[in-house]
Image 1 (spheres, one colour):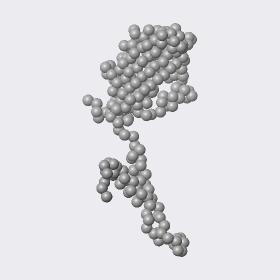
Image 2: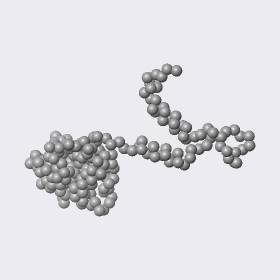
Image 3: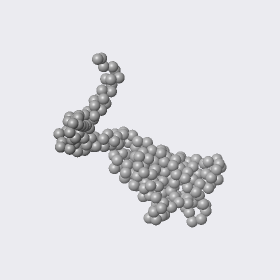
Image 4: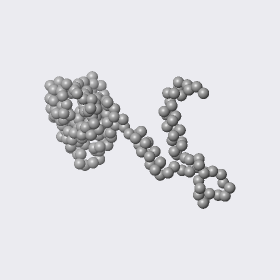
Length: 230
């Protein structure tokens, strides 16, 4: 019987499937005293060793691939209110007549960067790792969150390739502060300035962002497997 091109292409998968069916069950008669008289051949279950081997093979197939690149996206939004609040961005206090309402220090930029790295690694997000229901994170400076994300990144065998962030804030103007914010972010991430970009946009006086009642940040990052970094 001629072998078609499709059969040839999927021959390894078919062979594994056939091998699996042979190891899972045996069609040989089982010589056991509990077999009923006159009963025909019975199927014997695979041995514990076979089952353990198959489980290990399944676990190996499910193991996360060592991808050369990983891309993550982060987003955060906080209310802005007058009172005892501060506007913190990238670990720096920005002079303003109002600040972020948050459980921690409300640094929307660092929260977003943290989530972008965690997302690239397919890890739980910042709210799961540092829940606002836990009193120990009350007023916590957000550099702690970034450093934990960086630690996980290195543990998974990756380095930061580049990061691009957009801060959406009606007031104040961030152009006088952008370079200091970028420098501080480079230090936290142990990254070269050429790999970190910070953009600032207004929201054209539309909705809470444009009315100076909130701040939002988006960020995208690329992680590169360490063995590929020059």
